[in-house]
Image 1: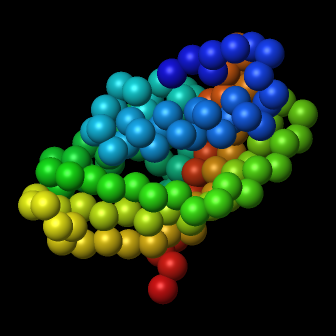
Image 2: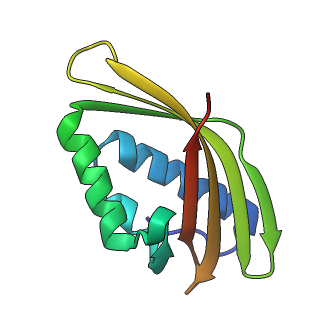
Length: 128
């Protein structure tokens, strides 16, 4: 999940990383998802990188098909870091129609590590 061209503007590179993570989630590719998650990742209730990966695996076991649709990204760059807020619509099910869906408000923290954008924090809550 390399950022590609090192001359790419920081915001464009970050958006490309998020696009790749979205595609990896829909493809149920935990390895590709983990490539952009920092070893220092912290999520809700102290979730670490491995717990994040296991949570995804559980979702993928439960649902044969997973859909992820992101709302507009609110990107704020600060030095070698960034925050990105967005809404995420998720759907899942075993058949050709989603059996369940949910909309979440997501806030993420990012840091440049070795020239690559890495997810260092995330929090999400359901939107009623």
